[in-house]
Image (tube, rainbow over all chains, first blue to last red; front, side, top):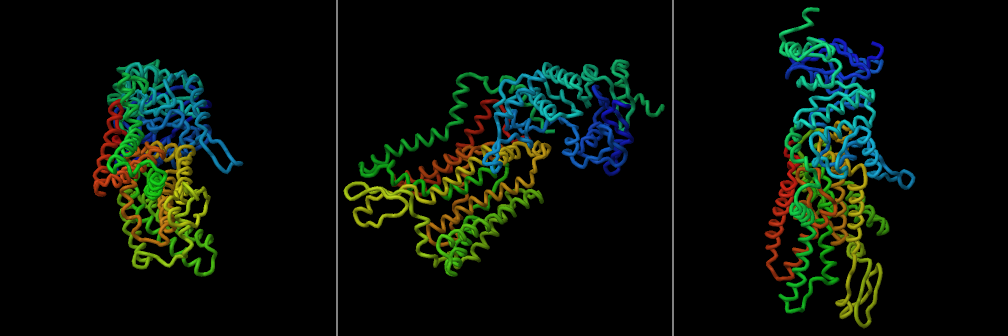
Length: 254
Length: 384
């Protein structure tokens, strides 16, 4: 409780007649990776979009870093330190690595006593390089548009961006989707690195091996409700699958 | 859920440095083709023009180069603003008529100011202010409707181009505003340098030497003021696009609207500014044409819209947004101007220029697309 960075309490969100998230509570502590599991349509994405400011919950409470918060935009959430990396990464593929990491928050040089500002591309590249190195991410060239990079490398750029801007909590939506196996391993490794640097990660996934590889705890959702919360080391694939398909439900039992 | 990653991932594995040397050569050529094309074309005319005229006319003369520069001014000015608009994944079809409106407004303001006793330089400034204000207002409307009301840019600027056309005609008197002060022509036609070769000649600066006959025939007019003004706008836009946050955000918005919004870029405001910039360069073009012809014209920009878009496309700006350079647009405008001038000098029927320019536009885009194929990347914007 004392080291909980994020607490979601009884969060509810519906669209028209459909209740996408039905009174879910969730806790993320500093220094842990929490897996958020569930089949398509289980409500994972809606829940996370409420936390990251994309949606506003109909009911319930979000406590972040010791204070109750309401985010009216994704920028609001980011300003508080919640970075969400969606599958499309929100990168501009026509810009280089530095431009992407600093997009919207560019480093500028001042001229004529602040009258004229120009981009400090060298500075941005230098900072990007340092951040990438600190995460042990290797990218062949920082000066090319990132559309020339692989999916995993772009994922890494998105993570590096969040790290540079000192995200307190990282939410990652199916980060290993569409990646080759070696790249999947790299991304999982990055998640561990983040945790070791004290940045907790919420990993949304329906790939169980990923969850077992990096998470400390898992939360399973089914049809908008939280049906299980387990310490990863104390559960197994078979059990989690049963929760995911709705064959088991701790919520009903409780 | 744009699934670009799934397609780009395997191809990107060997990165930009990969590929055979042939591939790299093709890539290089496709990047530089506009420069090469311009160079080859100039060479062709340098050889062909004297040949076809029995050596009496040359292509690369001071006079002809200045003619090309003067001819390029309006197309380039419209193209410079359009470059920003296209890079931001928009399009501005109103610039031709905005130029006309600015020409009419600046002529009216200039005449009124002068007739009510203002000295000519002040009247000229009043004309510039009126032209830019009118153009800027249209640009603001374009941008505001596109950004805030989410109407496609093509539709909005098509609509405003008709509106502006009507307003320009209504405000002018029978499509032309005349009765401007006589001294005005000097602003629009005088040059930085005058050079008279041969006996009795010399070099003069800023003011047209008062000569006639043989001396006048030998006089070269180098760097007229409108060319200088355009060079200034060119330098400004180049700085803006390639060195500032404004330019960076223009690329970002064209590359990924989604990423821009989520990065906290004030996208709506930026889009409005981009359309205002586009209108402003058209406004400058309209103002300069008023100075040049000592009259405001409600039709001056009509034929220039498509040429300016052609110049931008030839220069390598992507219709899907996110890519392009200011210098590319300059090359594109130069290609069109050199082509037009050269064909005229070869005594080719002037209408052939349209056929050639049209072909070059299509080839330009084909080359850009094949470049994307060569590096194995998906075409930008296709997934959005």
